[in-house]
Image (tube, rainbow, N blue to C red):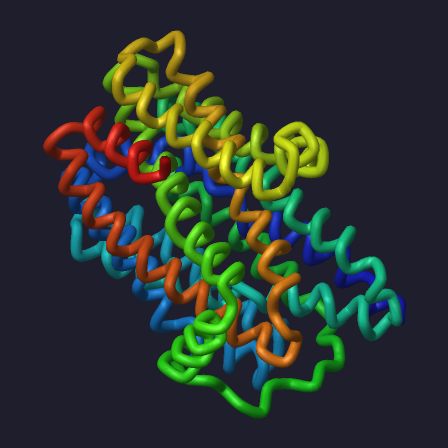
Length: 377
C-alpha cells in the first residue's frame, strides 16, 4: 500500500516537470525571429496541433486503458522530449509540423492518464473522499510550473537564445520520463469498449437536444472559453508592438497564470458579489470582452498588463467552472460521453479560430483584439 501511496507526490512532481514550458513566455518571438515564419503560419501550426489531438484522443485513450496509465505517461514524456529536439533542430515550417504532431501525441497520451493514475491510486487506498482536494493540488502544480518556467524562459531567450529556450525543456521532460518508471500501476477495471469519434459526438449532441440549460452551458464553454484563450497567442505580438522588452515577456506570462489561481480560489466570493452563478458567468464574460476591446483601442504600455490580467482572471479562469457546472445537469450513465462531446467540439472550434485569427492579425492585430472582444460580448 505504501508503494501505491507514493504515486501521489510522484504524479505531482511528474506534472510539474512536464509543465516546465520555458518557451511559453516567448513562443511568438521564437517562431518569426528564430523560425522565420509568419504569424498566420504559427496559427496554422496551432490549428494542426489541436486537430491532431482530436484525431489522437481515441487511440491514446485505448493505450492508457489497455496497456496501463504508467505506460501511457512514459510514452508521453519521451514523446515530448523528442518533440522539443525536433523543434530545435532546424528552423523550418515542415519540421515544426512534425514537432507539433509529436507534441500533440504527448498531450493526448498524458491527458486523462495522469488524473486516472491519481484517482485510481486513491481508490485502491480507499481514500476517494480526498479526490477533490488532491486533484486541485495536482492542477496547482501544473500552474506553478508555468509561472516558474516563463520568466526563466524569457531570461534564457534574452541572454542565450530562443533556440536554447526550446532545447532546455528536454531536461525536465527527461526527469519526468525517469520519474514515470517509479510509478506503481494501481488496479483499474479497464475500458472494454473504445468509442469512436462519431459515436461519441452524436451521443453527446443527442443528449443536448433535450437539455436546454446544458446546451447553454456547452455553448458558453465552447465559444467564450475558446475566444478568451486566444489572448495567449495575441498578447506577445501586442507587447512587442507597444515596446515592452523580451526579457519581461515571461513575467507577464507568469502574471496571467497567477491571476487565474487567485480567481479560481475565490469563485464562491465572486458568485456572491455578482449575485448568482448566472450573474458571474454574464459579467465575467462582459468584463473580459470589454478588456479585449480596450486593448485594441488603447495602445499604451502602462495599461497593457492590467488589461491582460483582467482578461486572464475573468476570462481564462472560466474554463474551470465548466468542469463543475455542467456535471450537475448530466446523468452519470452518460457523463463521459457528453463531456467528451463538448471537448471534441471545443477542439474543432479552437482549430478554426486559430486559422481565422492568424489571417485577421496579419491585417490588423488591434482590429483582431477588438473583434474577439466584440464576439465575446
